Image (cartoon, rainbow, N blue to C red; front, side, top):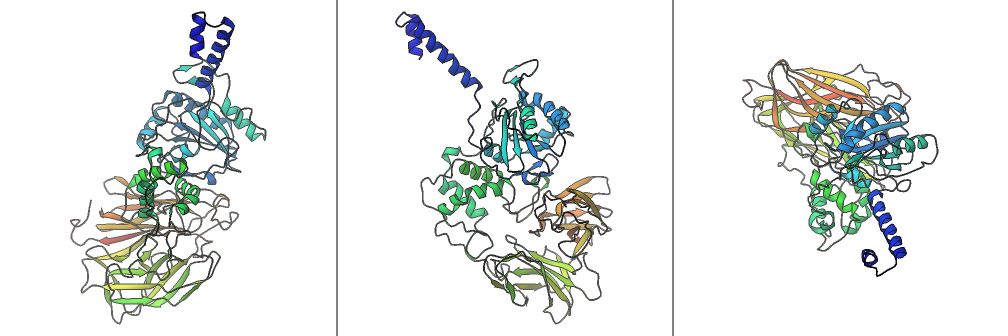
Length: 601
């Protein structure tokens, strides 16, 4: 085309031909400047958006499938982007214009270098931090899944069928390096209004206008190797459960199996369901974390986004032998208690079983540890052992005092150095078993091992609860808040925390209120999952000086959007059954005898 145009200038072709070619050239240039970015994610009104969950700058949990509105509007932003900054007040105005029941407006930051603190700082500078929730897409997976390449992009998702009904610019006022006094086309507002009115949008997409998003994957998408990059992540983070004889619902045994499950792997990563670890890493880390790192998540999502190519190299998962877990990883116990054989049916959702067994000790002993050996890893979801002391109160559970807990990925055994628990003869063990069904009948004979100490330990390890017994959850309430406190009367050491609620449990946070006036968040669980009774063990014990209060705050989701909710029309109070509720912040604590020298401040 350029050659023809040059020829016209030298008189080698007719002016009419040159004019036609020039017009086509100008039209092509205009299309290149105004055409939407090529998107590899869901196109409007076609593909279903995978479920996703993100945490906002305050550590609150937002999940697409739990949105209580007809539409979710995502606006992609980035610190310092002039287009996004100028559009944020428009998004805030739209959030006021449309009723809360119709549309939820979420601001999403997918920029690699932006973190919660810097996002909060910018939102506060623009005076919108209290108007709109700002969510961090730390894996960039949501932007990738939706095919978003620039900040300033708005995406409208129908919550009825999880489909995109609009994607593109907010309006035509602002673009890269230029702006108009007023917008001529209000793309987002018009598309959202049409959708809520039950009409097709006049325009289902528009050009993306904003700053380009740079993908933060440590390896370029087209250079990711299944054999070198992907399989090792799966082997390290997933195969221990997703292997023959273990609790994972399918085995990660070879490339073909992984590729066939790639869409599901993407959704479980985006929705934060897997790996099953609920602690917010912004507020600290814990031993035995079932985490997948940010770089690992990005590699997996990038690879899946590229179509999960096989590439070269031998398949590391093919024929991989997963050694069975050792019965007693910390050595043969001094005493062993075995539960009666349990029959697990082929199908159904099973209530917790509480099995009483007499402690296998002939005299009073001090325990230096308790280990749990699950008998059938295919169906044992978790096990909690409590002891009912003669003529003694329990820990608030109604089942005794906590001794040990086990779930896939958690190793049990010795108590912290210098601590122990007393086990008198004649004690009754309450062994809580949670089983999951797998399609055919199974049996289980879980064992509990006890490790004794030669003498009374320096510190007595206790399980203390911060519990609320008088809460009331209204029918349909999506976030019914509850609080509980624990007073620390003497200098103590905190080793671990374990939130406990039932099927309506939504979130819980532990906070230390020190005598000095200082406050410290010890643990935040933005999305509590009743199916995983997790113990969050501190890598270094935390010193709690006398006069400290531990404040546990949390909430219940009694709405129809909670898929585990037994009945959203019921008013719920405290009760032992899973269709009732509990609110307990369990803590493993030991009182110091001679000052805080052995504990971390």
